Image (tube, rainbow, N blue to C red):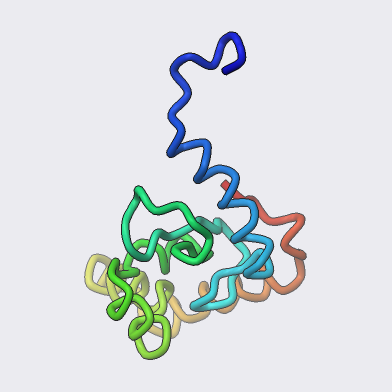
Length: 125
């Protein structure tokens, strides 16, 4: 171990290495909705398994609602609600004076921005 790395967590290091591989494998975009804004990496089985086969790239909105567990995750990726739709439902429940069309307009604006700005320009945490 190099000097100065005494407290480095091996799981965190393994995740950092795998994270780069997974984001590149998934084309720098969310596997669920295709956004390249605020992408994150989701653990399908659990946080201690950092093999790329257990990891997928999701935007922060989809990551917020993605389930853990192999069957649950793959069923959600295939048939579940996307994060921006879930966020729109939540925002409509909190701000009842804003119409669904207005929220959809905001989502469309973000999607257009995402299309006009390649992934290398998008913020990736």
